Image (cartoon, rainbow, N blue to C red; front, top):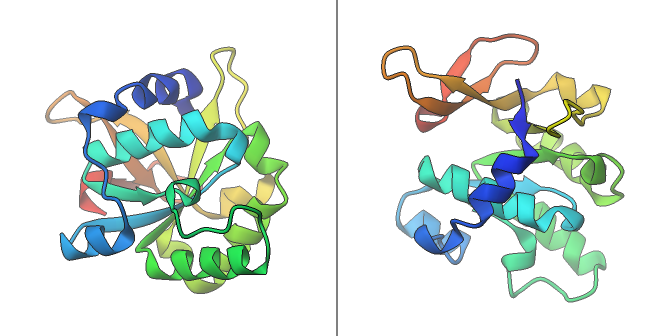
Length: 175
């Protein structure tokens, strides 16, 4: 199962109901777990929806276009800052969409994360259209994935992080 793009768009509309930390420093001061989001800027609505989903699970998601310290035009300083943010974060999420898999930046970012974060802290977020089309490149299958499932005890739909190629994992609240 993958996360439906429609659900991320719906979550993005709930943005006013959830308080998002304004910076990594604020999240760290509050002892919150942080994650860097690798995504295409063409998927801003989906990124915002994922940020809301994860915040509802107790995880702060860093999105570069929300960072006022980022250069307005991509350059070497942008790459340096992104690398630093990936390193500072507890986790690295890759929002797998048609746009991100064709991006110039996203493959570089996951390569940086692979070196800095290792397998344990990289999570792919596969997405799917209503028609069943899903997105991802072969190398993304090397990593854990975020997926939706039904908790056996509560019957509630929750997000879990599953090991690559298996249905074994943890509910996101416990990562």
